[in-house]
Image 1 (cartoon, helix red, strand yellow):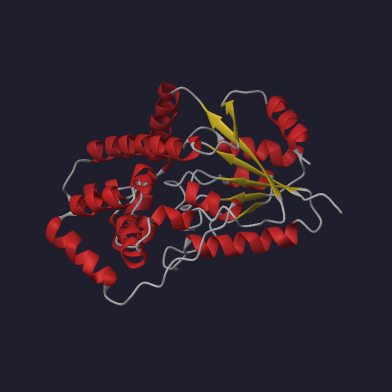
Image 2 (cartoon, helix red, strand yellow; image 1 turned 45 degrees about the vertical axis):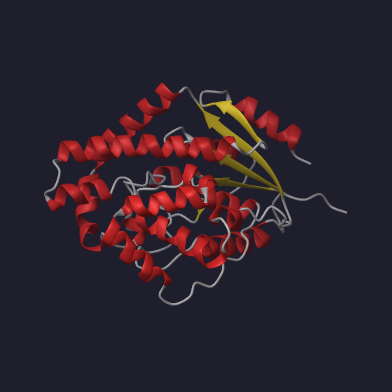
Length: 303
C-alpha cells in the first residue's frame, strides 16, 4: 500500500513570519500553498489582512487567496469542503502540500474536519440580535463564558457576529459550540506535520506594531474607506477595519484608531497562542530558526 501524502501545516501568531516560511518550504518541497486565513479569502481586503504581495504570490502557487468577495456568504464548512476537494485532486500527483494561516478553526477544519452544525430554527438569530441591542454585547459574552468557556477563551468576543453564531448553536443543540469544532475522528487521506513559529511576547508585539505602521503607509486607511459602506458585512467585522470605521464615523481619532488596531491585533495574537498551544502535535520553532532545521524535521517526520 502506498504511503499517504503529507500536508505541512504552518501555524503561529499574526506577524510571526508564516508567509515567508511557507514560500521557502514550497520551494524546497516543490509544493503548492493553501491559505487558511479566514480574511485573506476576500479580494477586496488586501492590505488589512496582510495577504501575500504579488511578489510573494509569484514565488509559489497559492490557493484560497482573494478567491471570494465580501458579498459572498462563505463559511468554515464551505472552506473545508473546497480545500479537501482541492487536496484530493492535488495529492494524486504530489507528495507535499502546505497549509498556512493563523485562523485556528479553519486549520482544524482541514486537518480534523468539523462535525455537522445543527439547523438553527427560524427566529433564533433575531432573538439573540435583539438581546444584543437591548442588553449590550456584554450580555452575550457572559452567556458564552458560562455555556462554553473553551470557545470563550479563544474567540473574538468583541465580534457580535461570532458571539451570536456560537450562541445560536449552543442554545439550539444544548451542547458547547466548541464541541462542534473538534471533529477529531475524521479520517483524511493525508498525514499532517505541524510546524509552529513563535517568539517572546515582546518580539511578537513589536512585529505586530511595526506591521500595522507598514499597513498604514501602504494605504490601509484608503482601503478601509472604500469598504466603509459595507461595514456591516461579517467579513469586515475584523481587526484593522472596524477600528477605522469608528474613525470614519467620527467617534474616535485616526491616531486612536491606529492604536486600537495594534492593541486588538496583540489580543488576537494572544488568542491564537491559546488555541494552538493546546495542540500537542505542533513542533514549535523560533521564528528565526534556520530553514534547514525545519526541513530536516519535516523529512524525518514524513512517512
